[in-house]
Image (spheres, rainbow, N blue to C red):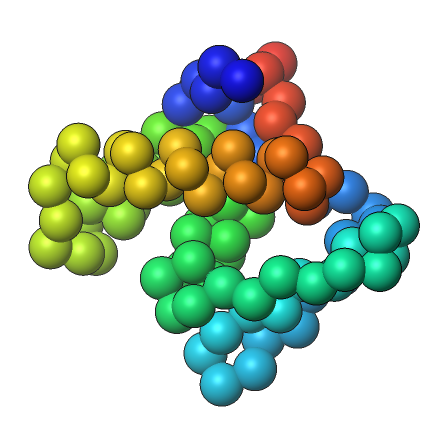
Length: 95
């Protein structure tokens, strides 16, 4: 999968989330499986829902965390590829 940072990530209707103690639980009603995100993953999920592009998420995270840009980019791509592969987010390249 080629991931464009100009894309916007959206959550399909069959995916439900609940935040518990600063961490996020994601439930896929189609597969009846769930995934837990730690505090940083939860923050990424929140930013994906409130920004217009993955690039905006990346820039905000650079401001919030002490991390090298290359490391953040690689980690963000890895998480998004996992979420997309599980059908928990869909990337819209028509931003």
